Every structure is written in C-alpha cells, then in structure tokens.
Length: 560
Image (cartoon, rainbow, N blue to C red):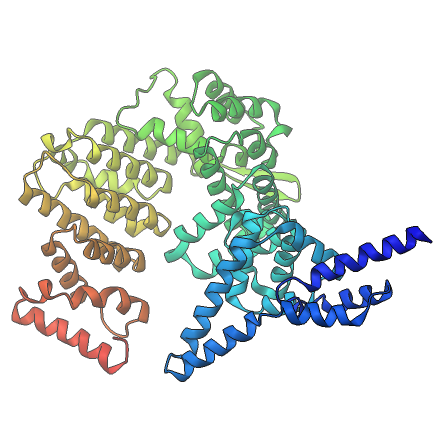
C-alpha cells in the first residue's frame, strides 16, 4: 500500500512539474496530464494555481502585437511572414528529435496538427531541412512519407531526405524522370543534373535507380522507337558517366546490368579497360576476334558509353598515337558498335545486319586521316567537302567535335591560325545541321571558347573570334536551340565581363532572324539586352527601327 502511495505521489509531482512549465495550458497534452493527475489522487486546487501562475500568454501576445501592426498599416502578408519566419527559426534552433519521437509514439500515429501543417509550403520546407539535419528521427521520416503521399514529392529536392525511404525515393525519382521527359531538350542539362545528384547519392541509390531504368528499357526495347524507352537507357548511361567522374567503382554494376557476365570473354576485356579507363591492345584484339567471328556476341555489349568514348578519343584526340599494326581492330570495333543492327524474336537472335559496316569504317578512317593531317585552317580548306560527307555519321560528328575542341583550345593553335574566324568552327554548323542531339555538346564547346581568354591574340582579333563564336550560337538558335543560348548571353551581359559590341552584334543578328509571335520565355531573356542603353546608343537608324518593332510587339501583347 505504501508503495502504491509513493508511486501515486511521484506521478502527481511529475504532473505538477508539467503544470508549472510556461504556458502548459496551451499544450495539446494538457487534458491527458490532468486526467493522469486526478487518477492518481491529485487535488484540483494545485492544478488551477499552477496553470494560472505559469500562463504568460505568449501566443496570445503575439496575436495581439500582430493585430497592432496590421492596424498601424503593415500589410497582413508581411506580418504573417514575419511571425512564421521567427517561429520557424525557433523550431529549427530548439528542435529535439527525441521529444518529437516521444510525442509521435504517444499519439500512436500522425497527430492532427502534423497533417494540417504539411498543407503549407513554408512548413514543408522547414520539415525538409529538419529531416536533413536529423535523419534518424522517426517522426520526421514519417512526415516526409506523409508529404510524399500527399502529392508534394516534387518539392523534395534534398537528396539526403529523398534517399532515406524507398517509397519516397521512388516517387521523387519518378517525378524527376517525368520532368526530364516533359520539359524537353532546352532544360535537359539542368534536369539531368538533378537526376544524377539524386541517383549518385550512394551505392544503394545508384544501384536501385540503374536497375529500375534498365528494367524499363529491357521490358520495352523491341518497340523502343515507338514508346521512347531508349530515353531510360540514355539516362542510365549518363548516370554511369557521372558516377565514374566521381571515382565510384561502378564498372561491375554497369556490366552486370547489361548482361555482360553471360559472355565471360567480353566481360573480361571490357572490365579490364573500363576499370583502368584505358584501352589496351590485348583486350581489343580479343574483342575483335569475337566480333569478327561467324557468331559474334550481341552488339549491345560493346555499346557501353565509356568504352565508345575511349574508342572515339583513340582516333580523334590530336595527341593520340595509333599503333599501325592494330589500328584496324580498333576501327572495326568502333564501326561495328556504331552501325550493326540485330533482329530478335524474344531472346533469340534471328539475324545480324552489317550492310553499313564497311562504309562506316571508310568514313571514320577518312575523317581520322583528314583531322590528323590538317591542323591549320588553310590546310583543312581543301578537304572540307570530303569531311562534310563523313559528318553524316553521328560517330564521326562526335569525334570531329572532340577534335575541334582540343585543336582550338591548344595554346599553339593561333600561332598557325591568325584569322579571327577559323574554318574549324564552320564544322560546328554542319554538325548542328545534321545532328540535333549534339546541339547541347556544340553549345557547351561554344560556351567554353567564348569565355576562354586567348592571351596570344590581339584584342581586335580576339573580339572578331568571339563574334564568330556568337554567329555559331545564332546558327544553333536557328536550328531550335534557343533558351540556353539566350540565358548564357543574358548572364554575360549581367556579369559585365563581355565587350558590349559583342552583345550588340548578337542582339541585331537575332532580331533580323526572328519574327512574331514571341514566347514569354524568349522575351524575358532577350528584352533586358535590347533595353540596354549601351546597345541602343550606337544603333543606326534602320537598326533602331527593328528594335522598336520588337518593343512595340511586346508592349501590345503585354509581354514586356
């Protein structure tokens, strides 16, 4: 009996301590605490006294001050934002994951107030930050799943938060993939980087994502042209390349996901070269023997993006030294991977189509010879038409693009080419014309060349060179690659590190090329350049007329 009295007294004291805490009457657990207190023999008067004495009316005072601010003329939205931000900072500073888990456990599920606050953007953002800081908090992990289930998975942009639960991660990954497909090629690079950041978070996210993407492709690959499942394979390859750049050892995974272990001799050769990131004659010879046999392995095994990139570099890097004795083996494998097609009925291979193999070998060889014999613009001019014929093949176009970049970036380039408009850049126009999928790569190269400082060039020649680069960008815009180029030149103008004559040249050339109707996106990026006083000041009368026509259209259509 004495033990029971002692236990009851202990519980009463614990309840009294709670009643004495600041503003406890406002706590959600107040009724449960009062009930517990009375069940263990507590008297009413201490409850009233303690709750009254501890009541400081913090929440009510905040409401009163907010009402005063509104009455004095402060906008309601500003007052609300002020209160919410202060409350958010207090929560972030004082959040205790153990107490949060205790409340969560006591409630036996999601409290009503939790389901209410996730409906508001400001509190969802706060919960994402808390979940990132406290990854082991049960309540926060449950809340993130609740947010995802409520349809807000697109807002979960923290990789750390998304990768903690497979259900949440799956929804975020799905949302990222859908965004990549829907927003198209102009936002492709940005959206792809988001996917890469998500999937390369750790070994588990990498493997899960790659298995998912490869499953999507393998289930639908027989109809990939109709259903677009090749996009899944392409994203998978980009993830592989990004993971390799981060020095992750992903070679065993990427080969396994491609069914390479079913062919041990192919597996051995590719594993060795991909792991070392270097081609070697022994493995190339073995692969050549396999793929030149009467019953070669499936072509998709050597369509590994890293392996193909190494083969292309072997032929088109200016500094590459080819082994004449084995060059034809490298050439055969690159041409085979680029041109051979297989027809399947389920898992059974019915035929191998090699109709374009010999022609592909000839065109790669021709392009290689031209590139390695001509480094100066004057030397290249005579072979330009022949090289244009080779550029029809995507594999040659990628190789020449790599060659042009390395040639022009070489410090010795302008010692051989004093012209501010090198003919090598004309090759980029032809590649842009023939291969829309290479537009992004071409722009990346032009971007790099434009920002490069060529110390050996006279200032006037350097401006002429950059004007030529802008002309290549404008040609690319004419082929549909618009927003990234506008965004780039807009940033150059804002940073004020670009000669204003170049911006003026870009503006006038674009205005002469385009015509209404104009999208809001185009106007938002282009209008600041046109409204620049340094551009308008030096315009001729006919140029001012073109500018005015654009401005008038924007004003009449409420686009400015």
